[in-house]
Image (cartoon, rainbow, N blue to C red; front, side, top):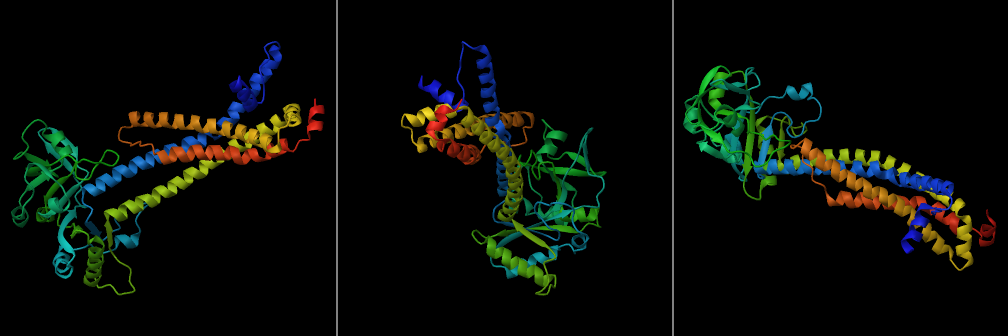
Length: 424
């Protein structure tokens, strides 16, 4: 009985089975109130889905970056990190870094432990890798120093890493990523096999272990082919885009970055007033950059969802104002038998918060279902539902009801009981 009374108050009507016409009209009123409560559903879904996707992507990115080492500093003549939009012409005019910078950095920077380097062959047009009829287009072909695999935390699953002898003698030996191994030589011993890269024959001396983490299903190095640095320079002499990986001593990453930056500025003869003509980044800076981007996306999503919540709030206020008029006599009876203004106010505020709160609950349920659906359709798209987003969405939907229910509740509380009892 108490539940029926509460439901009657929330929906603003009662059931009269003796009068079908009245019952039908009251059913329409209940349905109208239900739809009004659902006004904020889209907003709640938007916030939770966006937060779910961004949280999952951040977890993947952090895992992938940390796998390559949290004490590493990445230096390149172009801006590194997450690139938004096209690079400027001025940026492309920067002079590439040189491996001759390595010795001065190691000599002058007591917080630097080691330095590895890579060469990116942008002039190498043919990136097709072939083996006995099987082939794939490698997304990453690079020449690297012998210590690259140690500094970049790249583990060898089969065979060995490239050595100083491979680099010094410009040997045609390569290390391939796990994806290349599965594509070219699955179910057989790959070490010693000859593969064709860019029309030339190379011997596989090592296979990288499968990465533990990925970003949208991809991980740097998984489909790569690594040459000795000097071998790639021999094959593609026009290429000079050198990428430095500076490993700092434990706990001295910030200091190592400052020291290395100072040395690089000196080597590149920059004045104190000149901006860096190179970029340096760390795992932390890459994560902060991603967080800044996701924060902007999150604000846009919140802005769009606020419109839905605002519409829902206005709808709830309208429904309650109509409800106050329809229930004027009921309010008069309550006040005549002793109900205080605060009692009437609380009643209508609870009704408003119940309507919007139900919309929030339905939005949360649909967002969870949509998130699970996305994870099934797109396995590489991470969907981790953060509890803070669920809590915030529900609390916000309830607060919308509270805010937009104040005017109808106040209007109901101020009704004169005598006038209300006369109302037909």
